[in-house]
Image 1 (spheres, rainbow, N blue to C red):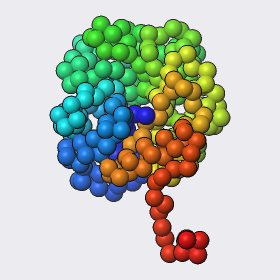
Image 2 (image 1 turned 30 degrees about the vertical axis):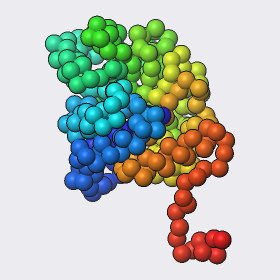
Image 3 (image 1 turned 90 degrees about the vertical axis):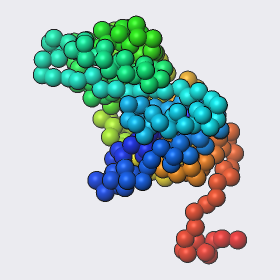
Image 4 (image 1 turned 180 degrees about the vertical axis):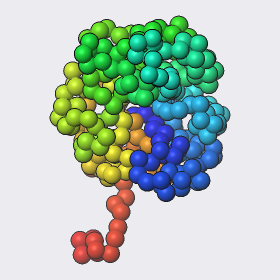
Length: 267
């Protein structure tokens, strides 16, 4: 399991009002409180925009509280212009981005899908100029990977032998934001030559945790991962316990949510 950060940073994939609510209510302490629950349960890896002060500061606070160093998977954006497909990245700009990533403690650097997917070439079956970027990541002392919303990115990276250690890919049972049917994406993940870090398992809150987590944990490989974002410490506790119960094939110990309509089946 990996700690997701969209709910920390204001990317709800829901409404503008929801984004604004997150940004207004999430600060260093609240984010650190949530992350601490994950870390004390053994989930010591976080994925997201480490450049955002609220995330970077929360990571530092959690490390101070727990005495454990977090593994940071950063997803920076390398600017892409109309000239980039032909000329390649602005390498000076990429170098500056990577320097910042390294200084903020990133272990893994996965160019965001805004960069990756913009350079996917279906004609030549490659990701243009990405080999240069991954080499710079490696030379900077970080581990390269790719963040993508396109299944072609994984396939072409595998086929061309791109120097990456893992992939970030959308994966949820309702196909939220996914560009192909769920069974197609599932097959792509199963056939990937490198481990896959799945994201949006709960479809940004459109799926309840029980349904969403049951699906992903039962359809990925042992080497693959699930990235889960939560907005409160209690939600983090629930997602961890649900995941453990699914993996251990036992009934979960999470408290069931109640409404008046359930009174006839309770007790």
